[in-house]
Length: 311
Image (cartoon, rainbow, N blue to C red):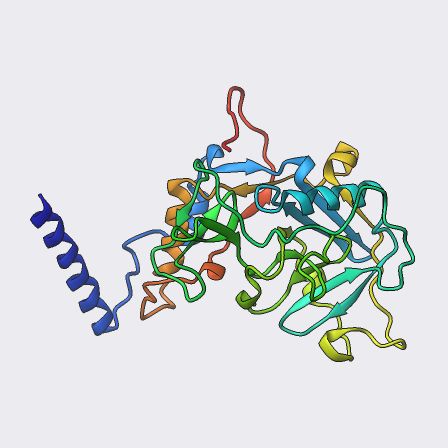
């Protein structure tokens, strides 16, 4: 049996190697991204949990963030407390650095920090639970031994170290800190709006991911000072409010569903991007980076009677 498996693996490598050498695409051998999504089942999707969904309401629209308490429970707890205390209301996006981050906070200490919110230990990485779902990408990574997806988030892990951590992909949300690793509380947050700054992995606590509205931040005018901070004569974008979806009336919520990353459908989506079947692509890449895998989001749909959303 071992010999047969090795023979099949070798045959597959020879076949795909010949295809790459000939410059031929794999078009038609598997469906594209849109086709996979069109064929998905209701159970391939999961609704955002209102208690772990953050609404950043700007004058230009709403940014929807899914929080990741499984990876940064202390920081997420602080952020929820800050949101419920309306700490962020009327603060501003104070820094927009090109190809890097958009950041908000209260550098002038205009808003008092609510009781119970303090500086935290650095939740840069943690031992993953034994039952943590993990869909591993097959193509390796520069920054970690293994990368993949867990619960809809890009995750890196090291079995040798016994640790897992969120990765700094586009749209990921982190907590600002100073040199002291215990100087972050959640009162200052940023969103990645450029090429994935993976060198920040395991150096900053990541707390979630923008699932809708990231363009409202990535399209902002860049700050003219060092690191993209705004000068005094520049007008930063005001934050109207930041709320947990659970605290917003049902009629005012943005109800979304996210593709589950622990299903065969998601595996097919990954393959549709590893080897693009569209006619435009003449040479298949045959590989994909962690931050190039899109996580599909759509407006929530009514479930048929008896249908239960997947976890």
